[in-house]
Figure 1 (cartoon, rainbow, N blue to C red):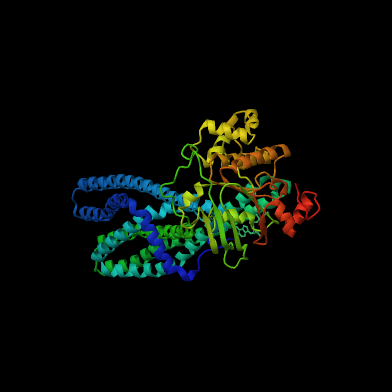
Figure 2: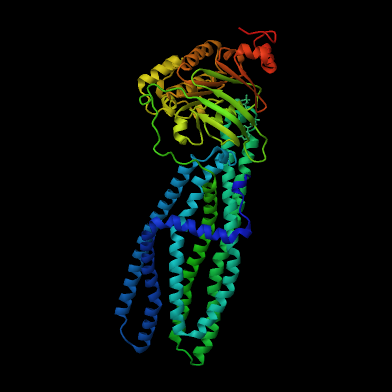
Length: 600
Ligand SMILES: Nc1ncnc2c1ncn2[C@@H]1O[C@H](COP(=O)(O)OP(=O)(O)OP(=O)(O)O)[C@@H](O)[C@H]1O
Ligand SMILES: [Mg+2]
């Protein structure tokens, strides 16, 4: 389980209650008048109920004095009808508001999710984040409206009933309160357990989504490894955990529900005993005892509503604390006026210059340094290659340029300006980036191509398809550019995915093009064609490539040799073969040349 979904310590209950109430108020605030309307309608219904015992008392009194009953019966019927209609309409108004609260919570979560910093997302699982949007938000439905109204009407009805009961007979009220207080104390102790059970249950739902996402995300590997059973068991285990905590919560809720019943029943018996004695001794008339008993049963509803509100509050607070955890994750600022860098608006992009000054970096406090005093300069245009052993920190160079992560020390300059001073969206719009595993998104081929250049025209697309040699593929596809490529582009070959990713980056017309092993899966013919495209692009764009195959970068303008987070050497292929031991060794093994001799 990740740390973000760990239930909070019991000791933190007080600040948590404050935070929950504040968050709850935030959700309800935009709908406060609707909630008030719902509340008023519920009150009308409640008031109707409140008047019924009084009308009954009048009826009994009228009976014993021999008067007519018709007007009282008519009044009673109207009360019931009016109360019912008001309650039904009130319920609808509240449900509607509840859905709006869920929508608002989802919108703010969704809006935040894609802006989270990579360093934050590294620590949580996508599946868990998803379950917070889909599942946790639904728990807000009850707490944000029905519970608020239940609590308000419950308290009002309770107070009103208690006042009337006090007027009827203070002694009997005392007896009632005593019984209710005893049972209520027990219920209050049970309450937080519902919240904790709900939070654990929701955490388990999050783990279930995480496990599902893990298995479905590597569907073929799961099958090829014969891991279906094991992965099924894993997902099932979290489903069971959710069940277990859900059942535990249900147990406490059931207990709480009966406590309400029990309190009224016990109070009924006590009032019957004491009240009977008082009627016998002539202290109160029998009609008062009847009315009192009716109020006692009437009490059941407000007490039940309060209990329900408390349960909903406990579940809602579990959801709110999980939603708030996402709010606490670091996010990037929203793009202010995102610059539309499309093929049309950036006709002749100027190549960007790039400079790493003493950059040190690690992925998190306590983790090892990935970059130590990385220093290099790329004046603009031309091709710069990064080579070095696996894990040397080459891809990390690109992540830092894109500002996916912040440097730990030193600075990175683009166009002579510290990238921390660049507006983030502007910086990124100047860059075209092909990730190491060339991601392709589910959707059509066209959607994938224009993904980073939404304004690209059909002509632009045609031109880039020809350059990346994808035109033959598009002709072959049943629906051409509108063919669906499957989950993560699973219907394309590895090399096709790479070419789609390169085409996408080229369409953006970047000033700085980052290619991370972008041609590693291409056949020799396609690779040499794409290399020509890259060389051509490098005439007017700053191109950085990471390559394992030295043959693809021997003609780069500059090669940066990285090893264990440091820049070992910088130079052209010829210079490095002569001067750098590691490079000469790589060249010797890969280009089948004796070490120390120029390789062209
Ligand atoms: N998100 C991350 N959190 C923690 N450590 C990471 C993260 N990403 C990469 N690393 C670590 O940083 C180191 C450098 O990774 P990087 O991807 O930059 O290497 P590379 O030079 O591109 O290697 P390769 O040639 O295999 O692609 C690796 O040891 C890796 O384990
Ligand atoms: Mg890499």
